[in-house]
Image 1 (tube, one colour):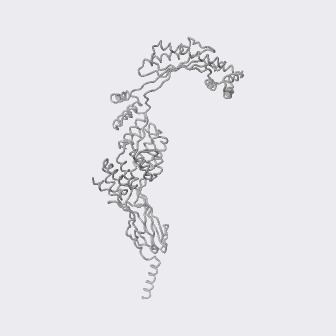
Image 2 (cartoon, rainbow, N blue to C red):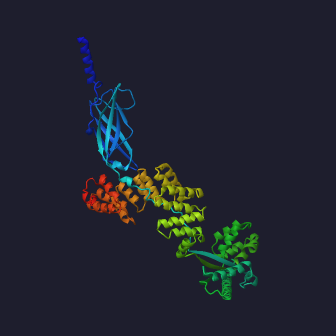
Image 3 (cartoon, one colour):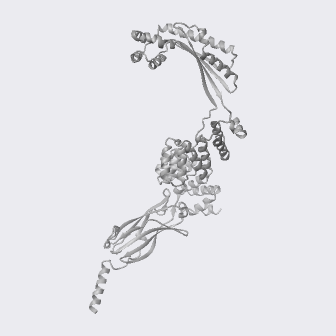
Amino acid sequence: MKKTLGLTLTAALALAVTGCGKKMNQFKSDYFTTNPNPLEVVGTQVPATVTASVPAKFFVKNAVVQVVPTLVYGNYNSVCAPSTFQGEKVRGNNTVVSYDRGGNVTIPVNFPYTPEMQKSELYLAFTVTQGKKQYALPRVKVADGVIATAALASVASVKPAIAPDKFQRIINEKYSADIRFLINQAVIRPDQLKTAQMRSFNKDLAEVHADTSRVIEGINISSYASPDGSYAFNEELAQRREANTTNYVEGQLKKDKITEFGELTAQFTPEDWEGFQKLVAASNIQDKELILSVLSMYKDPEQREREIRNLANVFEALADEILPQLRYSRITASVNVIGKSDAEINHLFDTDPSKLSDDELLYAATLTDNLARKKAIYEAAVKLFPNDFRGYNNLGAVQFEQGDFAAAKASFAQAEKRAPRAAEVQMNEGLIQLLNHDYAAAERSFGNASGLSDLNDALGVYYLKKGEPAAAVKAFGASKTNNSALAQILTKDYSKAKMTLAAIPAPDATTYYLMAVLGARTNNSQIVTSSLRQAIKLDKSYASMAANDLEFAKFNLSGVLNN
């Protein structure tokens, strides 16, 4: 019996010496370093890396240790995926820690962020398995709190894309008529004044003059000679055609009692080579490519004419089909159609919106900054013009700004039914998807809205939510918003962030809170306190946020928070 007992004691001692038989000792907090510490929000997550430096003669050879990172805040615990390590004598695929040498191991940490996590503690909980035995070791604290500045990125503050109206206060119209001349003549033949085109021109001009909503801005006469004959002769011929046409127009205006017609201008072109080239290019004349090559080879007008006349087989066709079309005067009236004034549009919306066109209604919404009135205008637009996607899209944009995201989503869906490829609709649906944390869908929608000028801010927030502040800075460009300033703060470009915040046209509580964060990061206590006072004045909820915000851990805020 004594001999057996001695052997048992010897075996037990041997197991202890080799690190197999004893239980695992407690882990100590100085075995661990956490990066970052305190933790920090990246996008919508709280990631970190805990590095463990396990000393020699510590990790038992037959032990398996499961480490569970646990974030404790208030009455809540959040855990993330465990990491498992094993001793040298364990059969398994986990990271091995040497008993004799110890070693360094990493424990990844990642929690979905919630605001309550700002005031928190990160612990590691340990469960040890040795053979059939399992026991827990005391947990160890490895980090304090969460810096949540990145969580200030706001989808709700992004301006949705408005589908633009096409309303124009002044629309310019052109009325024209041609007078044809015989070869080498400048006399206006009576039949040219009785053509349907000329009768219509004179009738239209008289009606415009009688219409108070239309104004004749000017009348122009352009007279031409065909490029055959000498240049000097054609110059004199075109000039006479201009003079005769001008006399006719002046007489007709007097006859029709049109006294207000802006300015009457006139010019002539001795040889219309440009018109000649266009007509030849559009014709079916044989060898037209040869004619066009001559025009490109010779710039002197008389040399051009000689070379073309040498093409005897085609000149006859030119004389019959092309040249007669270049002997004319063109009379053109420029008419401005004057649309409804802003006051008229507003009055009609208030009294009878049905008298407004779809573009006039959409334009009416641009005449006010009042979201309630904008909403009423767009509601009228979708009622009166239910097939126009712009009314639904813009109604959704107002609902989004008002914070009614469910209604905005429904309106954007109606807009998409009518115009599934409209860039404005795609961007706005991407904003709804961002709000719902569907980042893959938002990325697709923003891709479909590529090229839209309003997209930059939405893309910037998308990258902030994905934890990519450098990409966000690039997307925001020169945008002056809270979100763009936040991206600059997160990339540590504090001077640019300060300029951006100072340039925001309508600063709000978030603007001043970000300025306070900027002051804290640049160790400027005056900026911290003055900016926090203004932020809390505009939104009292920022007082409790600041009290828990580790950005201000080094500053005494009692004078700010207790006022």
